[in-house]
Amino acid sequence: QVQLVESGGGLVQAGGSLRLSCAASGVIFSIDVMGWYRQAPGKQRELVASITSGGTTHYADSVKGRFTVSRDNGKNAVYLQMNSLKPEDTAVYYCNVARWRSLNWFDYWGQGTQVTVSS
Image (cartoon, rainbow, N blue to C red; front, side, top):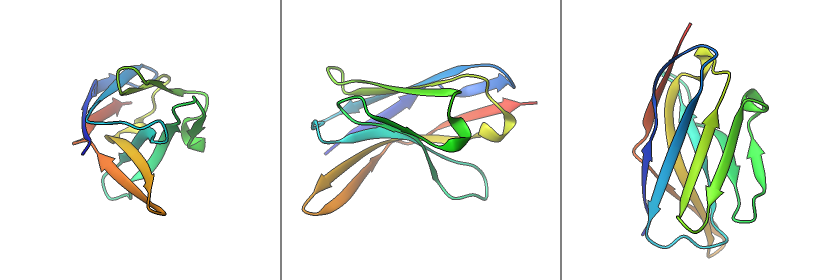
């Protein structure tokens, strides 16, 4: 079982920066993909960024060049550095671990942390 705890959300003005952190307890395997999703009011949850244990990253087009995902395999942690924030980045951000097992993906989720960007 994997438990995820996020921290670092808050209120920031447009153009500002925030850094989200996620600490995972339990066993994290090298094949697990760690990442961040977000959900704005009235919208579906969407992938923001993901990273493999080898450092391969993937970003949503809307955050490319502004957000950076990183991972510390020794600490079972994943981070999201968010720069040049925009009001449309306002959402609840969720830490995610995706595990491939028995020909299926299994997802573990954190409780979410609110990010609010004021204009």
